[in-house]
Length: 448
Image (cartoon, rainbow, N blue to C red; front, side, top):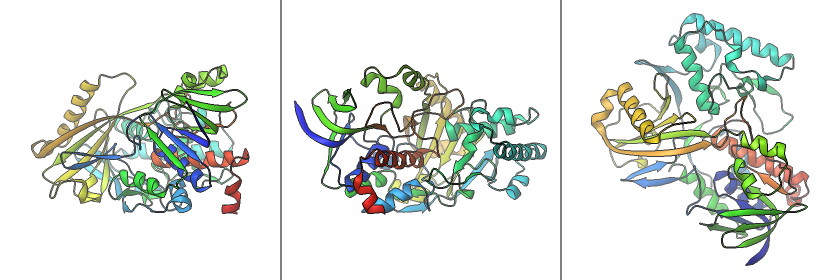
């Protein structure tokens, strides 16, 4: 059956779709959200397992002082989540654990890798500045091409770890441009180079936090901030987007919805399955998108082994691991007196998930042997934290599409930052493009 016309139909209720829905609803638009799963939030939510509050993967919410998510919260949230300072990032190589070297002085003293390597990488950083000043396109130059062939295996693994967790790609496929970012949300802002492989854009991660109550608190804040002109329908999968001169209808297995605009927040690579006759070059690019596959192992412990507020980068782990002691930030995430720790692993393109689970758990116990006797709960998650890796040999989506009034949001449409911040950047850009297309007349009135 046909339904009433909506100003905007949003396909997908992950955090990108929900943020877009919130913004547009606050601008006076009627919005319908269609989600194929039974719950909203996608890979940004929390749920209960044996008395523990489990997030969909460990997260650090970045750029909380003046980043894209902060901008959306300031504009549109009625209830703002509480954040606990995330603390330092520690690098673990062998049995040694030291803070991540965010600035030149710290880098020169970072003796977990050889001094000669540190000096060579300093030279590489200055070479990057030179290339940038010469106007070179750094999106086609890999980090591997820039660094010396003489660096040690340990340093190579250190850089490789950063590349995998920053963009989901190896050092051979990670473009230098990933280490150059836009500090503001404006397209004409001055671009800059980070201090030394600046992991999450701002020095020392000082403006990062963990959301009290887990990732679900972000979703709950969005949901309670919705106006009454938002409809959410879960368990309803979109099978076709009907387009002629522009988008006209969204068709699910149960209903047909008329609409003036569509914002798609699913996998951009799936668009050719939903829309007929897309341009060949556009489809070819979408088919080249490489998703980031990850495994998270949550361990519930009866002892607090990782006492510091801050995460650890496990360089010697196979596969590479990122350890986050979640209950250090919010003790309510674990039963009283217990400890909840998340271990995130980036997986290769081809893998056997059962073998990878076994291998990853063995890596945790090998690196932290005393943990095994304190494990009370093990929970595995197979996730896609970034819908597109940022690599020189990979495709990437865009907020704009070849179809009039069809827009995309999500981590496969915007290359700035990562995770929630990347999703928020995509939403802000979508709002700007819709405004320029004449679809958001109320925006200019409200923001001046």
